[in-house]
Image 1: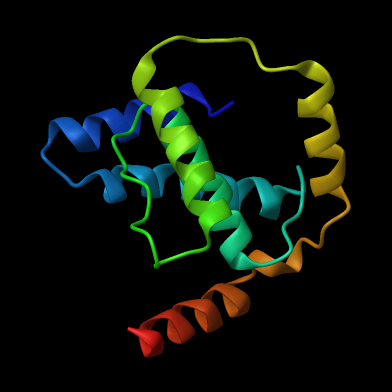
Image 2: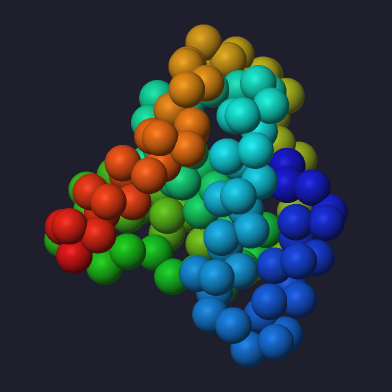
Length: 130
């Protein structure tokens, strides 16, 4: 569950007319901070970013899922599911068992994946592929 301040900052960005991806950046930043604090780990910078984007979609940020061909079908379907959950407004309580299992799995992952060095390498690689 994202922190209230993060949701407020993201909504403020949207009110200012910024794009949904900018607003979603707040959630990605929060996720990177969580990994750095040691709340849990991530296998790669991409995974930390993906978790943040998923949280943003579920929180109601109108961030459209990727177009077919951009990512795998499973990723796109997951993003579509998150998007529709966030846009529907119906709040269903998350299963405690599932939440705990996810958290335990993430705790076993490394923390170094969101170091300044790793994020810099990821940014350079992403820029090169663009």
